[in-house]
Image (cartoon, rainbow, N blue to C red; front, side, top):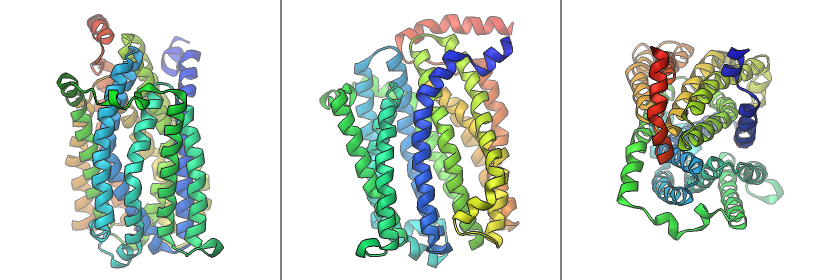
Length: 471
């Protein structure tokens, strides 16, 4: 009974997980479910259009990696300051984080608008895919800064345990997204049939609606860290040094991880067209699974970060171990449930037989193992960050992906030209290498590094207790 209590959690733990993680999981699930419907609609336009949107989504993934480092570091400050009840600290951190994120959004958005063909040419050498995706990419560029705004507001609200507003905003914005997509992809009510580009317009409209609803809620609810604009820019040299000292490893991690994924996608985009189409569908389903998992990631960051900020270090350590067990188990369960539904899922995207169908069947089955390992690594690293440790997970992740996965995928895909599914399977080899390293660090407790006074005051006693348990 003691083992079950310590490993699986108690009523208090699950109440917190559900109250914080479930709305976030539902929001992310909704967004990605709508993305899947978008892809299904685009799939009616043919495999070339489907592949073009898939490659554009990979650029959006690189953009996400570039700005999420700032956002993830912000969550660390928000949650710990929230635990210490330091509203001024939250406001200052939010203003600085959002400013950094918007710079990234404008750079990536501008590049997509100005040079869509060049960007798509990085991911594939197939001219027909580049031509099919350039309009989608150009329109998508206008929505990227909006994503920074909505992610910035949503991350602060979640970190301070206001989780319902982002969910409501997503429900309305994704409804707009689906409706506009239906109108413009197929040309309803006399509107032009824009095909894949119509999906990009839907995404743009959804981004505008999402931002408007979030800011309207913050103004009505009096969320001071967001409504007090002048206070957001009261940055001090000491705070900026502290932020970058804590966040630079996280930012570096996300950016270089995005670069690694770019290199891998460049190899995969130069394989057979059937593989590219199957991978686009797999990525959509993967995001759907990861969307639900990310709710638990957010809950772990908020719960553990708040405990560390409040000086409750033993409780944070205990709950970290619970999350490291719970999240991969949930991911594995979801993948197992999807296993018998692989055929109908691929059929929704227009694949009923042929090589693309066979590839997709294998990919979705293989993800039972790959997804479980990957989410375990992710939850540990994200919780490390919330507790103030950004270096260890960064080094472990970057070394494993750049020294193992990227060279292996390049050699097997470009030099040896192995079968497509063999190359796909090797895309996840870094997770196998990294997992035992991350688990060992987690058990040591050395990842707890508070940024608040209460947390720092409690740290010596916690480290002493950990040392005593080892002896």
